[in-house]
Image (cartoon, rainbow, N blue to C red; front, top):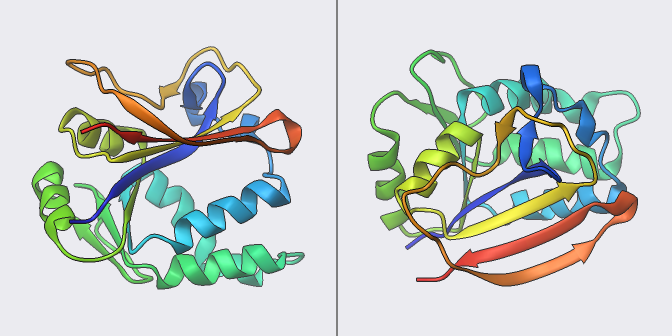
Length: 188
C-alpha cells in the first residue's frame, strides 16, 4: 500500500494562502528549504494536485530549468517535476501535459484506488483536495513548513474534521529565516 503525504508552506496562523490566494508571504525559499522540497518531491512516486495548485505549478515548472539564474536545485526540481507522474483532480482542467492525467470523477475513490497500488509514496497538494483526503482518513503523513508570518485569513492548511486525528512526530527542525519544518505521521 502506498503512503499519502500532504505537505505545503503554511503561515504561523495556519494558512497556505492569504486573502485573494496571496502566497507572497512565503517569499523565495532559502536554499536549504528549496533542497528539502526537492528531496521531498524526488521521493514521491506520484503527485496528486487540485486545480489551483496544478495551475500554479504548471505555469512555471515545465520550463523552470530554462529560467535565467536558475540554480542547480531549481534545474533539478523542474526536471523532476516534469518526469514525476501526476494526477490533477478537476472538472474544469481539460488539457494537461508533462506526464499528467486528469480525473474528473470521485477524487476519494481514485485516491483510495491509487493508495492500494504498489509503488512509492504519493504527495497531495491543494487545500480542497487534501482536505477531502483528510476527512476520508487517507493522509498518512503531514509535512508542515511553517513560516513566521501571520496572514489573518485565507485558505487553511487543515480542514474541519469530524473527529480527532492523533499524530506521531517524525521530524522537526528550524531553517533559515525562522521557518520550521515539522513532519508527523498519522497514528493508526
